[in-house]
Length: 489
Image 1 (cartoon, rainbow, N blue to C red):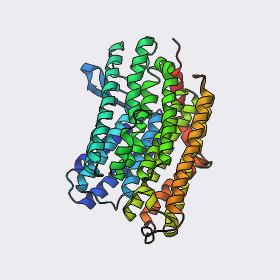
Image 2: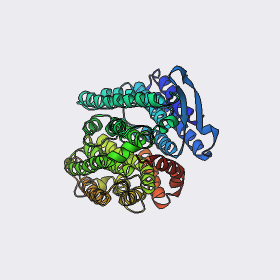
Image 3: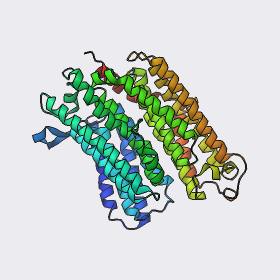
Image 4: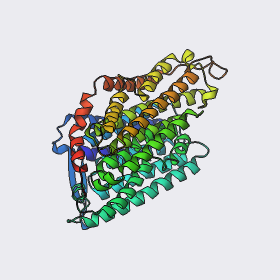
């Protein structure tokens, strides 16, 4: 029942939230609901992976061969844990931010959490698609109602991109459903199809699924919606988009693409990997040129997601282990960066790097905490990202699925250097040097802001020093995915 609670608690809490008119009550209600979800997640981690509490199945659309089937393995557990941590962190970090129609804002945030949780636990393709769309709808209203002056244009672009990808994925799901011997949408029925799909069909099925997931991550050249949407959305929404929602694409690759269309993955893995490399380097170069903190972090996210996608197509056990731990790490690190951006914008009224300077003199606690997060973002040893990126690099370098493994490894290494350039350059310009008229009267962050950033920093260091519990959580799932990805025509 744990996966059902992940969906029901934020769903019902969100529906109730629409009727809460007092803004403070709405804040507290959403925070309470998100903490309950986190508590359920911790309980789920304490259970054995064979526990019946981690699985649930009931009739849903029997005439179509679809069940309300949800379950949790290591991949689902790591992503539901990330989601359950992210929402209370975001609500606490942005507690002092005022929103018009606050009840509606927080209700939509909780509905988005319900959709995200559903995506990560669904083991029925039609149910997976249902939650995929359910997660999109709240984001459409969140992005278009709260945000910058150009939020409508940015949201329209975001919706068109993601909805197009969703339709392509639906076509693929229906086609695969028709091929199943039992006319079922179950994940296991889809897995059994890999040996009967022809090479020609493997190709087009691979691409329509890959495009759908590439848009969500996003991967070059399907990324153009992302910087505008991140920039124009309210920062709390941007945190969810970049910290959690992009993981839907990576999850889709690992759960629904590579194991189901293993032949297409083998045929077109090099092409997909090349797109990842182009996107990584391109995004890093653009990030170096940015003067807006939001856009810099947005392009940074594209680069890091590209590396994870590249490691998926390496199809090695080490690489996939790195991807799974890095999905969690990236979510923690990127949300911490967004919190800093939110604090700077709220306190000083600007996100322009050129207008800032010397903040370390006025906000030493913020400077220290950001420095640790930034070092994690460039994968410094003893931080969480080092573990994930080391495993991914090892997996890419030792990959036998491609003859370009050395080229891909070198290109990925260049991306790491570029990430150090834009992150350290940003820190130097924003926090060091002399103060100016804008930053002269800046104040350090408040106790609740210090508390939430410090908590994220503790997670960063703890996983960096001792990552074994996270690796143990995902090991069995990695072995299963690797077995299903093995394919020969």
